[in-house]
Each structure stands twice: as structure tokens, then as C-alpha cells.
Length: 298
Image 1 (cartoon, rainbow, N blue to C red):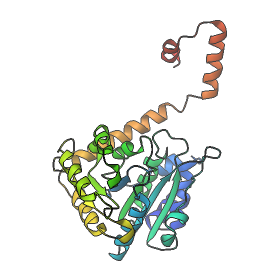
Image 2 (spheres, rainbow, N blue to C red):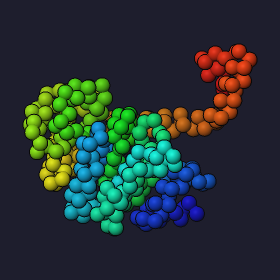
Image 3 (cartoon, rainbow, N blue to C red):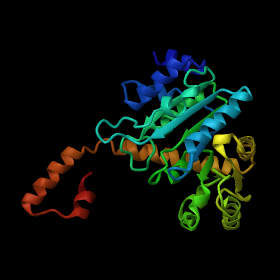
Image 4 (cartoon, rainbow, N blue to C red):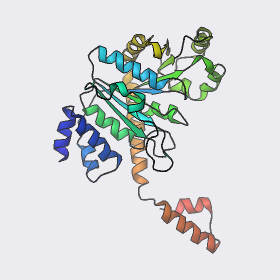
């Protein structure tokens, strides 16, 4: 069954792709076998992140439009905030990118964070690997843009695009600890607003080569609502993904992904309810020591 499903995914069958994602999301029996049978893929992932209100969804919508005009097939994963009640996505692809919902060359799937502290879907690594086996020319992941998701996308995407707006102003100073280090490309969206040029100059002056960015990080001005600057952004993304430095980042990315999968696998035996009962018992006995309890749990 999994073999047949995987074949359909590789052929670009939209229903098969959607079904496979649901199987992985819900850990349906057999999902691990499906993942283990995925073939090797050299496809690269584009990560779009940044603070709320920066226009990430509009930018992604514009990138899709640009790619489709060039005859590409595009796969998009949108990681949305979760409802605190049912852990479903609060925002949907039909609302944000309804124009592409029926386009045969575009596949869009909204994923809820499901309470994941990092702001990304807990199965995002597995789902993105599945997406690589489908016949997409480009795969884009847009994060929810809150908490640590801006940083965590760096451990998932081959090219990380950080979207900011001119109004960020002095907030750029606070990026040093996070976004400044992970950005492969900065996009200053809504660049038709006052102060945009000054903001871009200040941003460029703060960027220094480091980590995987041995070349200076590009800063692209866009007005996504007017489709301005998107061709230049796509060119910069393609150029980055063709760079000779990318294998270094690929090794780091794979290490991060494998580490995360091993960590999560080892935690599957930990049941919070059982944990709580044991803690309650030790509290009754007056023997509870936080560090000792954690150290002896296994």
C-alpha cells in the first residue's frame, strides 16, 4: 500500500500527496515505513520567516505567481497558529492564497503548530522530506512568525529568507541574537513606505559574513502587494542555492534534522500523565527532588 502511495506521490498525484501528509501528521500505522522508503532527493527548501505583519503570506503569494509564470510546479507548506482547543490551524490556505487553490501547478497545505514550542509543525521535517519526492520544482515553507520559529526554520531550510518592514526601525538592533545570523537573504517588504531606504542602509551596515554566509547577505527591497522586486528575490534565491558553500550548510542541516528526530524518538516513551502520578506520589512521600527525579526517571 505504501509503495503504491509513494509512486502516486512521485507522479504528482495531489490526493496522494495530501493523504500522505495526513498519514504522517496523525502517525497512522505504517507512516514510518512510508518515510523509510522515501528515495534520496537533492531538492532544496526555501524557508520564509519574519515577525508578524511583515507580509510573509503576500510575499509567498507573489513568489508563487512569479514561479508559475516561468512554468514551474510549486509546493507550499504554511505553518499556522493552532487553535488552543482542537490544535487545528487558525488560518487556512483558502483564505490566504485562494487564487492558487485550484491551480494544478500549485500544491498548498496549511499545517497547525499543534502546540509545538518552536512554532513549527512537530512533523515538519518528515513532511518536507515527503514533499521533496513529489515533482515540485520549488518547495516553500512559510512559518507562523512567532516565538522561536524564525530561528528554527534555519535548521530546516536550505535558503532562509527573513522578511522585515521599514517600521522595524530600532528593532533591527535586537535581531543580532537571532535573525541576523540565520538570514541567507533579507527582504525589506513594503519598501514604498517612508524611511525604507534608510532602513535598508542600516540593515546592510549591520550584516557581516559569518557562519555559512561567507558572502555578504543580500538585502532585497520588495512591495509584494504590487509585485515589485519579486523577480530579483527569486534570482537571489536561485543564486544562493547554487552556491558552492551550500554543501557545508547541508551537512549542518542534516545533523540538525537527525538530532531532532532521535531526540523526539527517545521521548516517545515518556507519558506526561504517568510522570505526573509519579511526581504526586513522591511529593506525598516527601522525597521529591527535581533534579534527582529527572536523572533517575529512565
